[in-house]
Image (cartoon, rainbow, N blue to C red; front, side):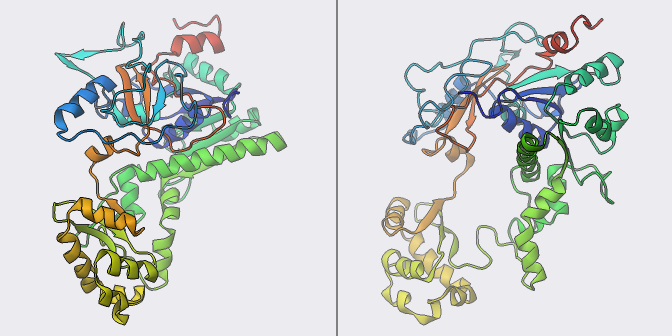
Length: 456
């Protein structure tokens, strides 16, 4: 059975994170995605070289981890991710990285020719194996890389020829730049009425901030997100690119809706998504609270309106975060975990409103017991009494987490392992294609869309 978007052609004039996030999801769903890059390539290719092949990463983790690997998590749905799209070896697996691959699974992908860097998939810097950019590997699997210089007329002609056959066009150049290159969106809509066009920008196509440069942390600051993130002493950024991701996922959702509408009407659409709008929507609850007279405060790993809801240290040094969502749960925590029947019955702590008023004392009661108990005994009690909790893990803990599902994806440097997309289905298994080398598909695409017009 084909993947949901099989047969659709997507062209993306993209760089960085937001647009590649959108088109990565389209590629995962079966669309053919042609990624148009400048001659120097998407600048996200050069953020770092930390996406190293699976074998090298496993060796590094084994050398730095003193504890045995965590047990395996449940297997993926039957057949999910088996095979490799464009490159064998791209697959889903549910075990942490240091654990061995499933029996019979390939440990690495075969080398493939890199038309830019030369023969072979591995490039060496001195004696150290060089990897790929973490961002680029995460967001560009399954795409074809086409290098175009849109100052050249023949390259403009090639892009025009591809767009004439495309179903979706995604671009995240600054507002107005695509028109200056000769591809005004309103003209594309008239020429190709079935084409779904999606433009992603920092602040939108119009308005007083439209011309501003916008990167993820800047939008976190401008949207107010940083003001509610961090501890009381200072604002902080969210540690991942949430504004980019929010814009990219909104774009993906809007494109899917437009494709469904096209099935009924035959008409495409012109969609505009901004990072600022995406994050402003996520800020709806803090904004409503502010306008209602109760602006949210920065509280680190605590909750502004619930107590106890925060992190407490155990005797052996683990940070355990608990969440008490009801007064019944509080009574269970107080009696069964804290071992204090009097506290469970005390009307001064009986409701969340009263506990929030006495947050300092409430948290101190919890901290005293947690601080006198080792992690293993505490988590056993919390589990037995169905209290919601989590360990405050570091990235190193995520790398060996028993619940973590991974995919192995071929890159120009070898197979890289990273977290699997969250959606799982009992329909057609997903196949995750390789991350392309810069310009890897240029000659093939040129011959396909402009036959007889080879680059001179």
